[in-house]
Image (cartoon, rainbow, N blue to C red; front, side, top):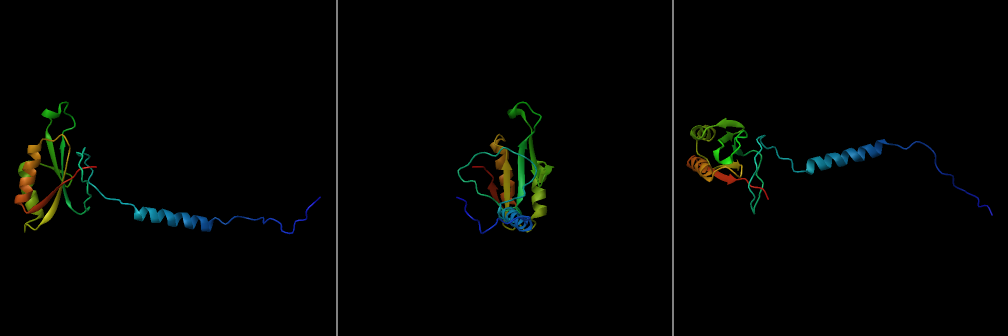
Length: 141
């Protein structure tokens, strides 16, 4: 028994323009909704902490790292970067005063390698607090 078809399948070209529009709109949505934060280019191994809150990208950042060429961490030289520029501990005070001459309550984020001696971090924090800065130590979860 042969059944008679009343409807024939449509044959023709598939319009790609609406599909491309939807894909581009989804791409723009996901790019804008993702949390992209610009961070300085000095990579450090942050210590783990229970609270790993983010910080705004417009805050001032000090990065403290150990010299990469050293084989022994205990003998490695400590490098201090303020806004991606190498500074010494003595110059850091003047740099912080240049940026914040009125000693307003501004936030300073310290990103430190987990193997940096604690005494160096305390010295940096003391210099920053004397300059009127609030200090945040960056950690990772």
